[in-house]
Image (tube, rainbow, N blue to C red; front, side, top):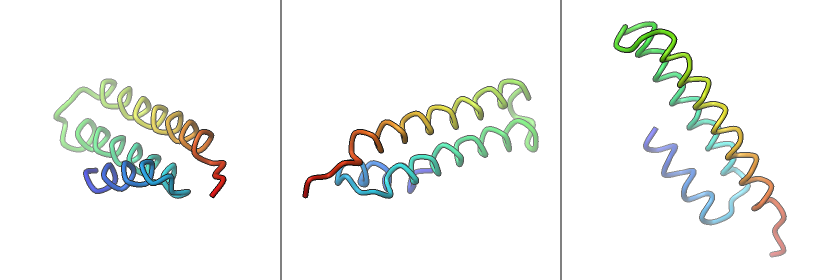
Length: 76
């Protein structure tokens, strides 16, 4: 997650076209972490883990779409 977060931050900062993909990958890794903690390790409640997994993916998709829309058109 830390590597994905750093790569996404660098990609957004440098306006790289692969930045939205890395942001979605970060959201998926956060969701997988919540699901493993909820369903496999039984650390958190199932519904709590499911809620945060769906929320992580939704926020990642929204932010990736925003970054793609605002940083997509480059005039370099």
